[in-house]
Length: 182
Image 1 (cartoon, helix red, strand yellow):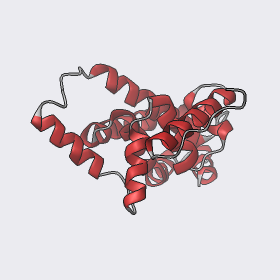
Image 2 (cartoon, rainbow, N blue to C red):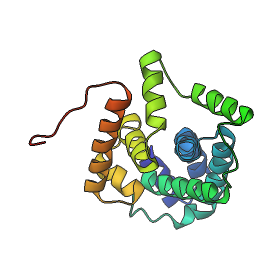
Image 3 (tube, helix red, strand yellow):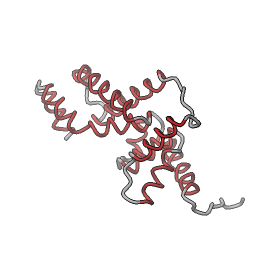
C-alpha cells in the first residue's frame, strides 16, 4: 500500500494519497499514541494532530525513509510532546484515577485471560522496552525497522527486547533463569 501512496504523491494527487494514508495508518497512529500516553482521549487528540501534520508535510516526503517509518516518527514525536505538556496530577490513591486506570486496562486487546495478563505486564514495562515490544511483536516489524522508528541503534533494540522478555517472564510467573557463571 505504501508504494501506491507514494505513486499518488509523485503523480500529483496528494488528496488521494492522503485518503489512502489515513485509511492505512489511522489504527497504527492511534496505537503508537496510546502506547506512549496511556489515555484513549489523549491518543485520539494526538492522532488527529498527526494527520494534520502529515497533510501539511506530505509534499515534503522525499522517499529516503519508508513511508511507515516517516509516519511512525511523526506520531511518536507528537505523542512524546503531548506527554511532556501534561502535568502529572493524578494519583492511584484518588478513587477516580484508580477507576480510570482500571477502565483503561480493560480496553487492551485481550483474546483470553493469558493475553490479558500479558498486556497488563507489557503496560508495566519501561517506555522504550514497551515500544520495542509492541513494534516487534504486535506490529511484526523487523528489528532494523524498529530501530529506525525509535531512532536508536539495532543492538539497543535487541537489548530492550531481551530485557523486556526477562521482565515479562518474571511478571508472568516464569522461574528466573540464571546466567552461566553466576
